[in-house]
Amino acid sequence: MDRAQKAQVVEELGQVFASSGVVVVARYTGMTVAQMQDLRAKMREVGGAVRVAKNTLAKIALGGTPPEKMGSLLAGMTVLAYSEDPVAAAKVCEAYAKGNDKFVILGGAMGSEVLDPAGVKAVASMPSREELIAQIVSILGAPASSLAGAIGAPAANIAGILKTLEEREAA
Image (cartoon, rainbow, N blue to C red):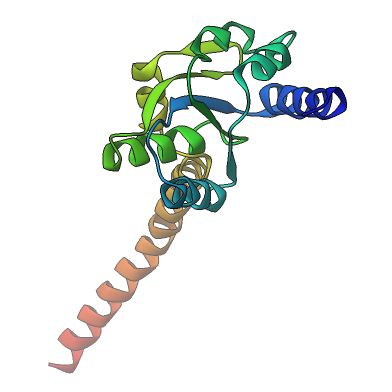
């Protein structure tokens, strides 16, 4: 890799670190190519990506970005998993680590906050952006449906009373 290619990798990684909602660092020693492709596919499904880069270039790219303190995690054979959604990459990595003992989460970063493996697990347990939107929509819709039911209830009660009176007169 020549100097220009290294500079390009550093620039790309710098953009990843600056724009990602979460970055997870994991050790992947002993994983097969098929397992790595499976991880990449699962990450793509949620809008994330997986990147293997030289640790020295990644440390250079971390300079001046919010997760700058994450450099201590970059030692050995590491892989970076990242996504714009602050929860997606952590969820995929946590689920993948449960099924593959060769994939070990070392930590990560969420904004400027450096996470240890327990922190990544905590982020993974949070609801995703889509789940939060669905919860908010259901909370906003509940009062409207209750109001519609309350408005319709008196009319139904009056109709029931009228029907009962009509049945009495007929009898």
